[in-house]
Amino acid sequence: MKNQRGNPGIERLKKIYSLYDDAIDHMEGVCQKKCSSCCTCNVTLTSLEADFLFGALTLLEKKALQDRINRHFPEKRYIPKMTTNSFARLCMEGKEIPEEENDPSWGKCPLLVNDLCSIYEVRPFGCRALMSRVHCSEKGYAQVPPIVLTLNNLFLQAIEHMDENGFSGNLSDMLTQLLPDNTSVNFSDPAKIHDNGRFVFNEKIPVLMIPPEHRENVRPVWEKLYYYFC
Ligand code: SF4
Ligand code: SF4
Image 1 (spheres, protein in one colour):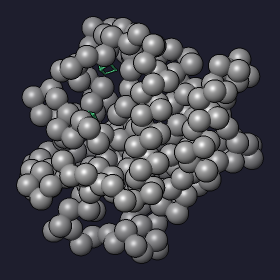
Image 2 (cartoon, protein in one colour; image 1 turned 180 degrees about the horizontal axis):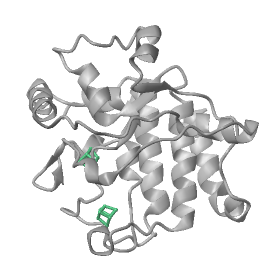
Image 3 (cartoon, helix red, strand yellow; image 1 turned 60 degrees about the vertical axis):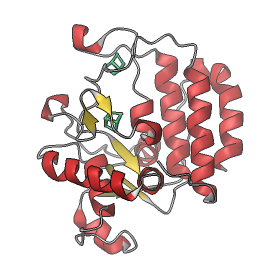
């Protein structure tokens, strides 16, 4: 992997990932290496995270990534109709929430190789945020502590906010747009991204999604997070 020093947005993103790791360090999940039933084709990320991920790869690693995505591009996958901040805004405005389809049985993430993440160091927040106190493959579901769900929302909101001129989408769709032989969507042309229907524009935080009972608990993390993303 390459060193990406110099891009201020990416430097801040790395600090945010590290802050999250510290914040959930004591949460006692059962997650471990090669436990991968949460690695589905439905993971999403922001354009800043896609830039970070793609920019950290060497040419050879990009070629391997291209081969894997070409071979295993998921036919059915989660296509978001809103971002975390647009969901918060729609709730705040009392507007209808669009229905979305998301089913883990649609398949594995194309970046999973022998039950290991092939881009682990630069995986997006959506992957870092997956944790459970029970083995998902045994129980058939993840058990995420409520405080972790609140922290996840907070970090998702912050990461989207700092990429407010960017957009979000499914990991496979986003990376496909960055691969060298792609010509279908130009990331620098917002109209085409909109027409494409597979990406949603990021928004600023309209309101924080913190339940009243977690406000005091998350305040110290929020104060550090605010310093990085604002
Ligand atoms: S979230 Fe579930 S499937 Fe994923 S690593 Fe943790 S226990 Fe394993
Ligand atoms: S990018 Fe890596 S961590 Fe994320 S879902 Fe895919 S294989 Fe799992």
